[in-house]
Length: 328
Image (cartoon, rainbow, N blue to C red; front, side, top):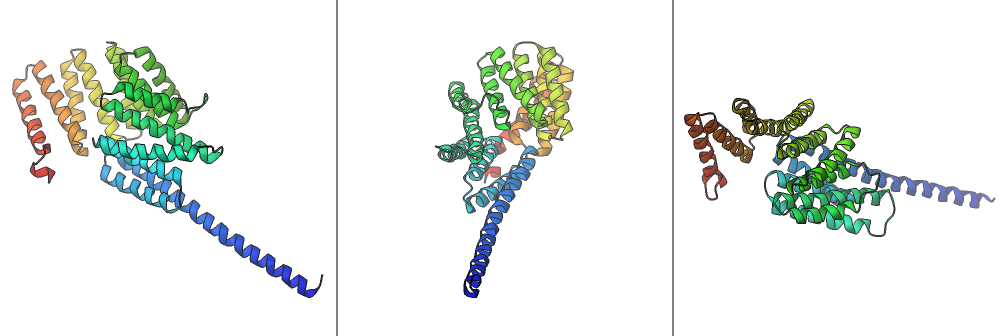
């Protein structure tokens, strides 16, 4: 090899190394951005659990912007699913539905004709999106439409799929069948979801599964079993300090106790739930708790207390009404 040829080879090698280094730097930057987006979603979820929805939404929107900046389509769809859940929690189902539909459209496009780990992640996001659309339909009382979305999602679930998205889907399917009075089917799906979440130690979802199982048993009139399940849900939510979940569990226990004609115990549970809702500032749930306390006070023969609860509820509802001072 001549000196000139050797120098040329060194130059080419040096250029190749520089080129690879530059490409690797860009790749690392993309990976870092994706990780940052994932962290924003994780922290956003922590705020959402505490019903701090404004902070959660801000973090999710940051995740969306970061994912868009590096053309991470799965990250975009994940962020849209997370944003939609905030709108569900705040009662804006139309906006939530729009976010979920965008997530589904992106995920469907991303899974078309692709077989890779990326496609697998996108399929999980697609399952979540369709499950979320079904949840919106369920909340609107359109159970049959909800089941249509759930059926489409189930077709994407593998026979041994134990992902968190699959567990949420099974939970939602169980809730839908429970609404239709198909209690055996509901329990079957909820137990599958529970097993997945127990295996993965996702305590918040375990609590949600137990809460829904308690609802199914309560509708069956099996109040002792329902109480035990709701209490297990409460213990699990307390373990992870999930305030909104704790309040929902307490409210469920109050409702079960009321159906067992244990009005004083129901009053205690309703009051504890009300205190948490009030602390969190979740106004619709505050109103619901006051309504329950009012109704239960009548059953206890405490007419004056019932009037007090009614007055507080009506004051809050007036503030919530369109055109009121609090709405501007």
